[in-house]
Image 1 (cartoon, rainbow, N blue to C red):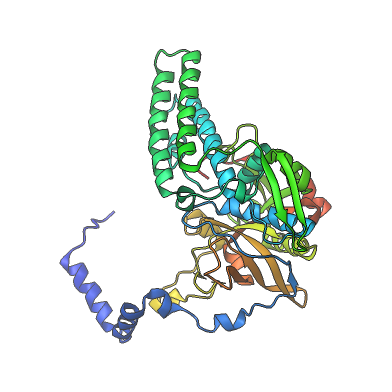
Image 2 (cartoon, rainbow, N blue to C red; image 1 turned 90 degrees about the horizontal axis):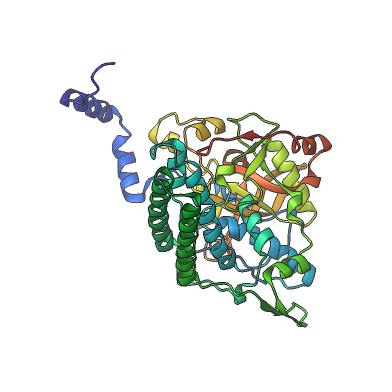
Length: 436
C-alpha cells in the first residue's frame, strides 16, 4: 500500500478541484449562513404530510422524557396508559416512568455483575468484556427489557412516584453508575482470578449491589411498597383503591397480556423468517431474552395497521436522528437532500447502513394512526415523548418512506400475524453475539 501521508501537492490538487466548481462559493455562503440541514431541506415535504389520518386511535396529552434515554419505558407505559384510559374512561392518566427506571438500575447492575463474573477468565480487552463495560449505567433499553420490569414489579401512577431532577436529566447518574460499576467489575474480576472463594465473591457482589441501591435511592427515591389508587374519570366519577402494590395494580387493572406481544424486526442484513435472541442485552435475571423475529417490512406494516384498526397503539423502534425535523415533528426519508447539496453519491441500502453503523436504533415511540390510500399506507401518526412543544402538541407525522428506511421494529400482538408467521416464533433462535 502506498504512503498515505498528506502533502502540499495533495492540498494543492484539492484546492484546484474545489476552485473549478462554479457553484462552490454560492453553496458555501448558503451553508455558512443557514447550516447544512436548512440548505438541504426539501420544503415540499411538509405539504405532503398533512395531519389527517384514516385510521387513528384516540389518545391524550403526550409525556416528556426530558433529558433522559428512557424512551423505551415511556413508549411501553404510553401503550399501557392508553389501554387504561380506554377501559376506565380517564384519558390523561400517567404511569410512573421513574418507578421502572429505579428498578431497572438495580436489575441491570445485578445482571452486569453476573456477566462480569462469568467472563472474568477472559482478557479485559476481550470484545465481550468490553461490551459489558461500555456504559453499564446507561438508561437506554428495549421493549423486552421494559416488559421484564413490568412483569416483575408492576406499575404505579406518576403521582405515587414522581419525576425528580435526576430522572429529568439522567446524565449525572449514568456517569456515577458507569464509574462505580466499572470499579466493581475490576474488584470482582480480581477476586475471581485470585484466591477468593465463591462465598467471598458472592458476599462482595451483594455488598456492591447494595451500594448501587443506595445510589439509585439517593438519586430517585425508593419506591413505596403500596399506594392508594385515586383518580376522577372523565365523567367526574371519583375512584379509590387503597393500599395496593404496583404488581396488584397491574394484574387487577390491566387486561393486556404482555406475553402475547412479539418483537418483529426489519434487519435486511440478517436472514428473514428467523428468530434471534441476544441474552447479553437482558436487564432482568430470569426475564425474557431480548430478541426478535426478522421479517420483511410489509409484514411489520400489515400487523401494525391491523392493531391500529382495532384501536390499539403500537410501540416501535427507529433511528430518529436521521432525516427528521424535531421542531416541526416531521419524519421523511427525502427531507434533506445531502447528496444533491454536496453532489456526492451517499446511497446505501438499509442492510448496508446496519452493517456499517450508519443506522443504529436510538429511539422508541408509539404509532397512534395511519393514513391509508387505496388500502396502502402513505403516512403515520406518531406519539413521541419529547413534550408538547415539538411537532403538533408532541405528535409527529411519519412518511411511509421513512418507515421503510429508519423503522427497525414494531411490537404487535401475535394474533395479527398469520399462522405461518406465528409458527416461526417457535423455532430455535440464533443467538447473537453480545455486541450485535
